[in-house]
Amino acid sequence: MSTLRLYLRLVGASIRAQMQYRAAFAVRSVADFFVVIADFVPIYFLVRKFGMLDGWSIAELALLYGMVASSWAVVECALYGFEIFGTHLIQGEMDRWLLRPHSVILQVAAHRFELRKLGRIAQAAVVLGVAVFALGLGTAELAWVLTGVVGGIAFFAAVVILGAASQFWTLGETAELQNMLTYGGSATLSYPVSIYEQWFRRVVTYGIPLAFVNYFPALAALHRTASAGWPPFVPYLAPVICGTGLWLAQVAFDRGLMRYESTGS
Image 1 (spheres, rainbow, N blue to C red):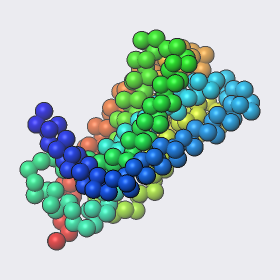
Image 2 (image 1 turned 90 degrees about the vertical axis):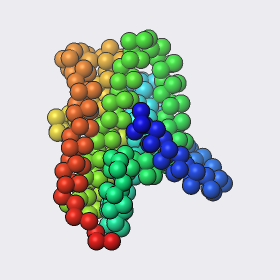
Image 3 (image 1 turned 90 degrees about the horizontal axis):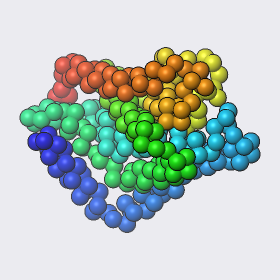
């Protein structure tokens, strides 16, 4: 609880700093809301043109999109400090964080709370809510949706923390790889994994397990796991895989901290 209180205090300080320019904050928040809507527009027109996408209706596609968009928006809002970690590392900010008697991960997470990204969260939540209502999902199905959203938060958090950990060795050279897995991954998962070529399906299932973020939980919520050709236990692996990824990310970051030798500032 003391750690949570500290995190909230640090986030509060970040928010107060951002709210010094209220007009700019409002404009950027509204822009984020409407720009992200554009991500869902192509899906709508695809279904309007062809009726369904590999057997998925517009409401089912909205469920997929809403789940992954909500997960990534939360991480982008709450953990933006890890996305720009390389800059702080080079500038010597890490030296200050290490001098404080608190977790470095906590300080990085709270250092840059992107309040304007709440517009993205709101947009994703609206799409997800409409999809749930249109599909008439019950309690058990909603549990799978929640599993996908929470698991997605853990997965994308793992990616950005791993990306930050890699900065201890590369000093920014892996930033594009991180963006490919976050922005690219969320765009990929806006569509059913089944529409992609077999080699790519294998990559996002067995290589980089993106499919466990929202695809398998969505199949379970829609009772389509068996018809999609997967064993019934596969969706239950989603929280395990996403949680394991987050644990590995923390281990990698801790190893990076052990390697750090200061900037001399």
